[in-house]
Length: 151
Figure 1 (cartoon, rainbow, N blue to C red):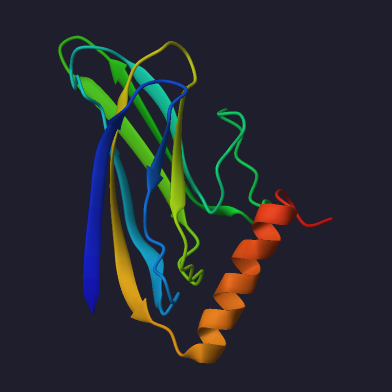
Figure 2 (figure 1 turned 180 degrees about the vertical axis):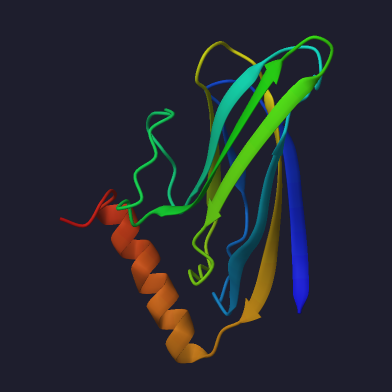
């Protein structure tokens, strides 16, 4: 199993692009790990929502909608600065059966403020045969032309 890792620090309201597409689409990916970490642990409180999408988002928000077929995963971190320690809580949900072969987009929304947030993502690399490649590519095309939840 080949694993690729990606990490970044995102400002509130930001969107990052992770470039994964190939010329022939024969390489697929699956999210296997998705973690968040405060850039200032123990200093400030934070409530961040970070999401992974198959298509670029026109607006970045903290709404989590599991019926959105373009959503690959979501994570929430809440850390409350106490005296004298921080009590972190992190929840991550990954739709691990989802295989994709195009770029992915990471969004960050700070619920109560404007704090930045670190993310760490591990993707399992999957070799796609012609049939799997076609299905993944067609799903991506459909997502681009008809984004959002399936009615």
